[in-house]
Amino acid sequence: MENTKKVSSKDKISDGPQTDPLLDPDNSEEETVNIDDITDILSKLSKVTQNVGEWSESTVQLFFIEVLRNVAAAKQFFVCQLLFIPLLVLFIFSLCVSVGIITYSLTQSLLSGVGIFLLVMSSVLAGLVYWQKYLLRFFGFKDTISQLKEGIDVLSKASQSFD
Image (cartoon, rainbow, N blue to C red; front, side, top):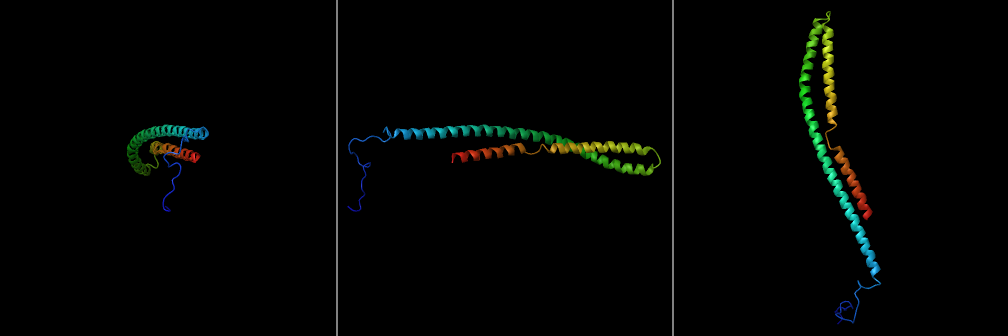
């Protein structure tokens, strides 16, 4: 008999009429508080889930907008490169011709014509370089990355508030 376990009153089949602890009126306030806490947590979780869903939807939309912007900038950059390369070749060629003409005509007025031609050609090239630098700002996903970082910060703060 020493090795047998003791049977507690809850393991007995019957010990007379007993009340259910969940239906006990003294215990109902604790259960109501627990249910209110659970519903509060579930409503907060539902709000966080809804906010995360809206945030992820807007992040995906932002990503696709930036993809479209990158494609448009790449097309313009390609056209700019197509214009830049021949103009660069022509500019170098015109410099060589200019050196020859300047050497030939040190005493004639052809020098002012070549100088104006070089000034216009260099201003076109400077404009193309400026346009390329302007278009390079549109490459990348800066806004999407910043929104993702913001979302991670919000989620980490929300998870800390549940602790």
